[in-house]
Amino acid sequence: MKLQEILAVLEEMAPLGYAEDFDNVGLLVGNSNQDISGVLVCHDALENVIDEAVAKKCNLVVCFHPILFSGIKKITGKNYVERAILKAIKNDIAIYAVHTALDNHQKGVNKIFCDALGLINSKVLIPKENYIQKLVTFTIPENVEKLRNALFEAGAGTIGNYEDCSFNSKGIGTYMGNENSNPEIGSRFEFVEAEEIKIEVTFEKHLQGKILKALYNNHVYEEVAYELYKLENKHQNIGLGRIGEFENQMTENEFLQLVKEKLQCGGIRHSVFTGKPIKKVAVLGGSGSFAIKNAIGSGADAYLTADLKYHQFYEAENQLLLADIGHFESERFTKNYIVDYLKEKITNFAIILSEENTNPVKYF
Image 1 (cartoon, rainbow, N blue to C red):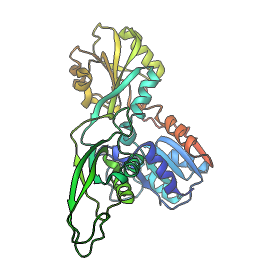
Image 2: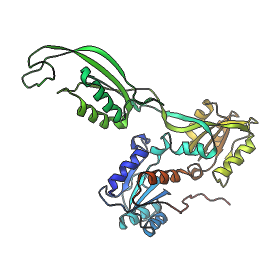
Image 3: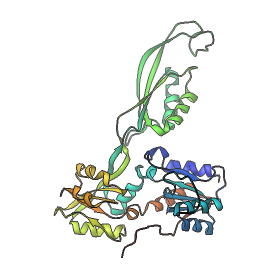
C-alpha cells in the first residue's frame, strides 16, 4: 500500500483535527507516496524502536508520542530525538504520531484507560470547545433529500448518540439572474419567487472541506447559497479525560491495589486518604494536573493521572483521592488499541506491536 492510503485509515481512527493546538501529530517523517510493506506500532519512536522496525522489515512506525515535538534547527545526532530521526531517514522509515488526536477521541486513550479499570458508563471529563460548526443552505424541494443525504454521508448531522440530524423549514426565495446566469428555475432577467427549503446541520470542524464538497456536488443551483457558523456548544463526545464508575464501591486501599494490578504500576503516589469509599473515578492519561478541579467538580471520588508535582497533591483538598500512577502506565494499552484497529482495516501486510519497553521511568 501507498503510505497515503494508510494515512487515511489513521486519520479515520484519530482525526488530526481532534489534536490540541500545542501538539505535533500526523506524518513526522516520510513521503506520503512511498510504498509501505509493514507497520510497527509503539509508544515512543526511539532509536531502539527504529532498529526493531528495520529487523522486522517494517517501514512505517506508528507511535503514540511524537518523537518530534518542538522545533529543531539541526539534526546531528547529539540527542535521542535526533538519533532516532537520522536512523529513520537512513533506513527510509516513515514515522506517524497520534498523541492528543487519540487522547480526545471518544474511543481513544481515556476510554481505553476506563475499560482497563473496569469503569462503566464513562463520559468525557472536559468536552472540547469551539469544535462544532453549523451549515445553513437553501434548495428547492426536489433537491432536498439528495442534498441532505449527501451531507449526512459526509459526516454532518451527528449529535451525541443520534445521526442524520437536521432542521428543515419552508420559505420563499427570490432572485434574478444577469446575462451570464443559467438559473435552474426561471430565465435570465426574470424576477423569480420560488419555494425553497432551508436545511441546517451541524458537523465537526475538521470535516468542513468534505461537507462543502458534498454541498457543491449535490446542489442543483448554479450559485450555491450557504452560511457557516462557529458554535459555542461543547462537544459531549470529544475531549480530554473521562469519568466513569464501578459497579460496586470499594475502599481506597482496595482501589489503589486494583489500579496497581490492572495498569502494572511500579508505584503509585497519592494524596492523603479521604476515608470515603471509591465508586466514581475520573481519569486522564498522561500529564493531567490541569484537570484536578474538573475532576473535583465532576463529583469524582478519585482522580487518576500522571506527572503531578509536590504542591498539586494539596489541591485534592480532601475532596477526592488524587493519584499519580505514572505517565507510561496511564497510556499503557493505547498501542494495543492502535494495532487492533489497523489489523481490522488493513489485512494485506503485517501490523506488529513493538516489543520494546520505552518507559524512561524505572522503579527500585
